[in-house]
Amino acid sequence: MSLNILVDTIFVGNWIGSIAIAAINVVLPISFFIAALGMAIGIGGASIISRALGANDTARAKRTFGNQISLTLIITVLCVIVGLTFLQDLVPLFGGKGAIYEPASIYYRIVLYGAPILALCMMGNNVIRAEGAPKHAMIAMLIPSIGNLLLDYILINQLEMGMTGAAWATTASYCCCFLYIAWFFLSGRSELMPSIRQLLPDWNILKEMGGLGFVTLGRQATTSVLYLILNNILLDLGGEDSVSVFGIIGRMMMFALFPVLGVTQGFLPIAGYNYGSGQHDRVREVIYTSIKYACGLGVLILVGLLAFSRNIAAIFTDNTAVVDQATAALNIVFLAVPIIAVQLIGAAYYQAIGKALPALILTILRTGIILIPLLLILSQLYGETGVWISFPIADFLSTLITGYFLYRALNRLKDPVVS
Image (tube, helix red, strand yellow):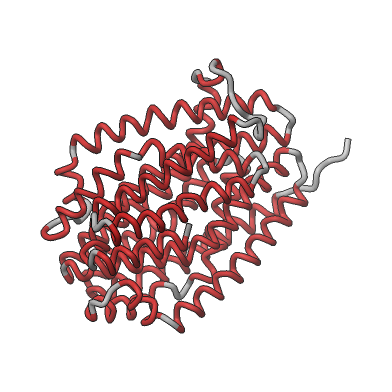
């Protein structure tokens, strides 16, 4: 998935131009929000499913999955209707102004058509993982990655469809992902396929799912707000080139953090299952193991980024001004990547054990509570440099705070009582 986002941006930047990177970056917060809805419902329900399976309550797990399907479809269809109705207002709001507006509008409209499919993919993938089938979850994510790259080449490079081709490549690739996920559940490989009755609302499940899912939605929603604010700040400070720079930085942030997020997502069902079965010693073990390996990945990522920052920036575009700005930004933004695992896994722990409020607070801590205010203040004081230094400062402070609460939570975990 990281490679998909990275290479997709490289293709668009080289085959369409740096303005296309800026245009996609404008639409990205909206795509994030739609994906966040699916992830929120998926992860919120997956926490319930993991604990239900740990307690041998398959009926509750099936009801949860049925409610996930219904809720995802209802919410995303409403989002598509609203999004298309207010297209001319939303695109400029997210920074799609001037030369960026037209390509951003084209991309936005087509990607929005596939929003329900994207959300169902994000939801279904989390359920597959919660059921203990991580290889199928991985395949489901590889399909849109590989499909998008192939379709980019055909639609943009060969058929010269420009932004229209880029948008259809993304939408069609997630349709392929959805077909694989549907096959997994309909082919008998899953024990969770719900009946028609289990699609009907169960308000107790929806309430718990909503509380836990709101954690993920909060994280992704703050990311969307972050992109909205940054696109507008950078457009005012440096014009379209600066928005393109953040397009590159944003893709590299995804690439840098996705391995750590992968460990975090793998951590969630294991922690939830063992917490549900009272195996607190295994919960502690998976916390320590996840942090150790995620921090190790963070160190490797940082070394690679610092060593090849200019080469990385130059892959995306031949615009020298954009490359120069992106190189300087890359050397600042990722300085705290090795320690961010503590913040991500600490927040995920509370989500895994069903504690929605502390999970929400710790999840939005970095982006919503610390980073966005820093950006607004430091961009006024130090311009674009202030924008970039806000990232490692926010990473350090949020890790420090989350680490404190995680340490206290570990001390409160007691060994299971043998009856």
